Amino acid sequence: MFLNRKRHIKLLADKFAYSITYGNDFIILCNSLNKIRITDTDKYSVLISYDTQTGNTNYIANEEDIIDTLYEFLRHDKLETIQKKSGKLLTLKDYIDGEGLFFENKIKEIIKELNSGTNTHKFLGGNRIEGEIYKDTLILVDDLMFFKTNMIDLIDCQI
Image (tube, rainbow, N blue to C red):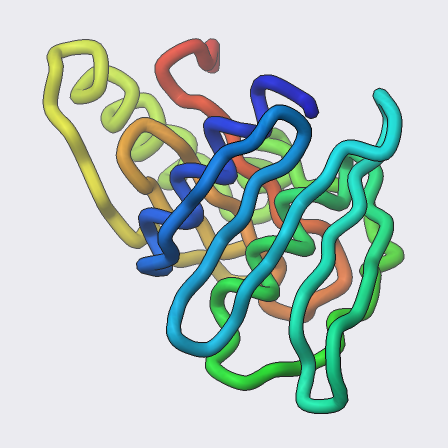
């Protein structure tokens, strides 16, 4: 599985209060409502199995879709089918371009805090693209549900 995504999956599980179990080629996320199994299929995609009201469903996700798909599953409080988004994966540039200089300065300030050892959890908000800092990671979500959710490690980020 994509090593940088395993860390992000663990952060999402923590954020949404899911337990996490690791195997050689799979990860299982559980809470009282749902059980999500992520299994390597090849080096370009994973199989995500999850429960819906009508039974178990399988979903193939490529690297760009993994975090977006999991974010949608984990934040829902009902067993629903998730649809793939057709937009591109959000980037830090998209966030700054869409939200302006204030947010660019805010991100720079947060990066300094992280480099000084301060652990942060902040909701930054935004007009179209919403930003949230969870631990040392920026989570970008399109509130119109077109662009794909992304997680960006701020500790390594250069603005």
